[in-house]
Amino acid sequence: MSTIADLRLAATETALATTFERAPEATFELESSVSKTRPSLWVTGVDRETVDAAFAADPSVELAELLVETDSRLLYDVTFADETGSNRLWDEVLADGGSLLEARASDGWWQVTVRYRTRDQLCDTYDRLVERGINADLQRITDVTDADGHETRLTPEQQEALEVALEHGYFEIPRGVSMEELAGELGISHQALSERFRRAYETLVDAELQPAGEESRPN
Image (cartoon, rainbow, N blue to C red; front, side, top):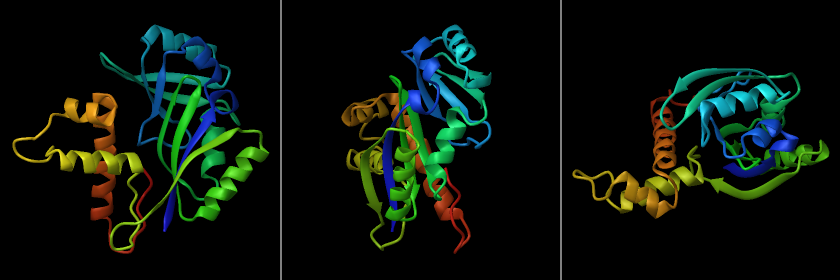
């Protein structure tokens, strides 16, 4: 049985503290295809000039390269200074074999969802964060199995979204509810629900298509 943990971490102790000071309205979300050495971050809530200036002023950011610009969000490749920024954050959180499922940051805080093989691995991670001066707020722990006792890699938020969508006829033809209405039911934005569905679909397809007996890759 695997364990999924939702952690809340202060940006001042992990990543992008100065960026949040310069762009307090910004929201950052880790792109699912992120590499450990050069993360990609979606940015919403601020314009390009504001976030460019914030990155430039942040001593933990060596380079921020704009990859995609749309009307509502920006995608950056970010290179952090050694031993700082997300490099430090992910090294601390994933050192005990965790798989990063989601990471978002707003209002000076990171919200991170991580899957561990066992609760002991989660406990080891939490203890290490505290020992190293990182104030980790453990908001939720979920032990995850499916009906047959097999592990599932869906986060609680992804599973909830799919269950509510099924209940309201979202997957029927014609649809019984629009995505906007479904997002309102869940209390999240249309964009957040779209991203949640995309990640859930990716997780389910990956689990279905992987060779038997082979461990799934992390999101």
